[in-house]
Image (cartoon, rainbow, N blue to C red):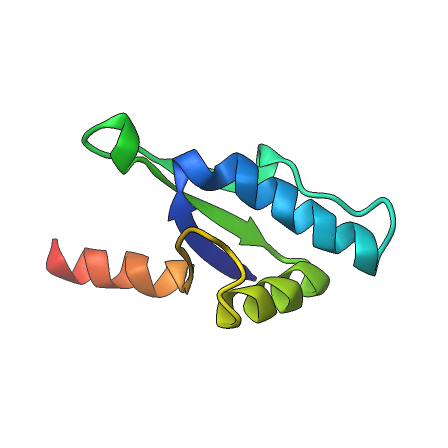
Length: 91
């Protein structure tokens, strides 16, 4: 499983960009907004979301796109499990 963090305002652009590439790799393969976890911020511009996938094709494609900085907005691969463990240690 892989998780990627991005700003909520960039979610639609992220889905469109990924669907463009996924369609080239495997026809009829597409993302929608069901694989996102919304993280509210202090204001609407601070809202973030996490894209979660267990599909190896999506993960490989995203790793390549993130490493090449193919997005015009920040997308970062994260380890959600490690983040939860760290937050529990701080509590």
